[in-house]
Length: 232
Image 1 (cartoon, helix red, strand yellow):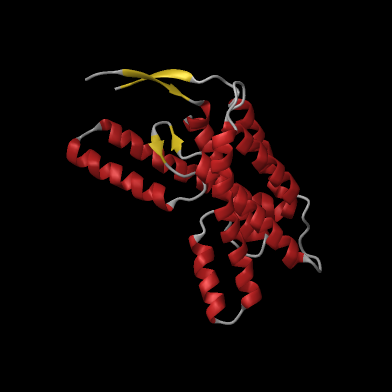
Image 2 (cartoon, rainbow, N blue to C red):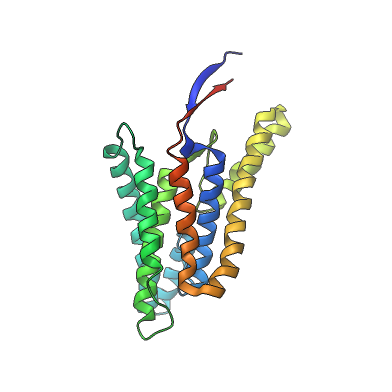
């Protein structure tokens, strides 16, 4: 079997992917616990809740679900724009994405909760975090040779199970390894949600600072040069 050398970018390493999954799980739990029960990452839940509230005539509540859906769509456009124009000799376009995420997360930490304007502040926070998650899911789609998401789990669960099926039929150990990679990303997402559950209940809106530190670590790691790997 032929071998070829390729470059593994730090942004596609499993360690960075695991950190992003922790942040993804943390943000989803953060918005649900602290920002009015809205899911900021995967928009399926918001779409369902949008339909339920529209049918019940709760139009103001429906808007709180429509806004993050729209922000998610905008995030995809922004990510693709940065990908096309953001590369330079020393800075990778994904570093701009991570830095933008960092700035937005810091800004959200200053939006208060539990006051007379909580509805407005929570909507702004949820829209901002949905935008962040959209940037992340669009920009970081490949991790250590597999295509997966770090802000939602459904696709990863499907891919992990599919790999197990292929392993059982073809006895290809790479399929088993890929399955473990997918399940690992799901595990780290759960870890992020669990951490968020404790920290957000203790610190409320300020708990999102935890994600800012994680993003800084990722940004620093991405200055490490790509390493050459051999693929079969």
